[in-house]
Amino acid sequence: MAVFHVEFSSEKLGMRSRLNVLLPENAQPNLPILLLLHGLGDDENAWLEQTKIADYARNQQVAVIMPRADRSYYTNTVSGMHYFDYISEEVVARCRQWFSLSAQPDDTYVGGLSMGGYGALKCALLHPEIFAGAFSLSGVPDIVEQWREHPERTSWYNALFGKKTELAGSTNDMVSVVQRWPADQKKPFLWQLCGTEDPFLRMNERFHTIAQQSGFENSLELVAGAHEWRVWDAAIQEVLPLVARKTKQ
Image 1: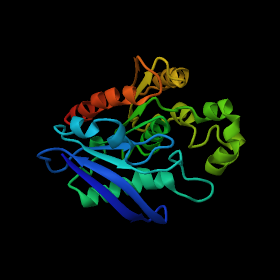
Image 2: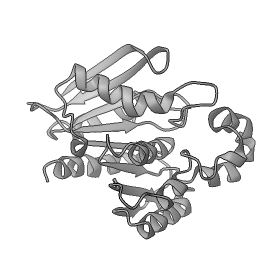
Image 3: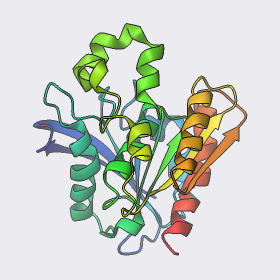
Image 4: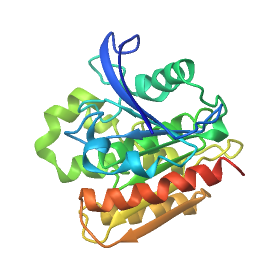
């Protein structure tokens, strides 16, 4: 297993940033991609430090890209920090240049936990021409509901998303994006996992129902556990081979 720690100057962010890349043993050319996003309060090292992902990815012909997104909610903020463009466009494009990775959308997936689960859904739903699907692990699929439940975050969310009254129905509102999906546009594959004791369980169940009603290929797997790394360590063991299988279809 090769682990690459990359520091570079981001054009989208206008500053230096970091990411990690995992490449499997005997990596083949044009490797499929899993862009794997961290949660709130974590960074590009979280998946490496909190799980055994390096072991799990060793024999999977999948390149795992783990970027840093700070506390951005994977959003182009109203203050002008283009985190969404950085994660969904620049990181993938740069890694394709630096490593022998597939340039095909059908070989490109995105996943993440908690805040990163929201980011994964957002990447796939707003850029279906780049990503074939998303894996949301204990994600926050309804940011409108999340703001309603956490009014103490208003100042912070205002700095990210703008006015609360403008959030519903915007491109930051994944529920609305799913419900308003154009009939002639290809739908990305959506996969959700959540612990039965997780505070985001009901939110994930509601989003799953809405996605299915909107015609998306969407599954929701419920597992024992709360909002914790034990759940996500087990989950990534499912995600990696699933990406490998889907990219061979």
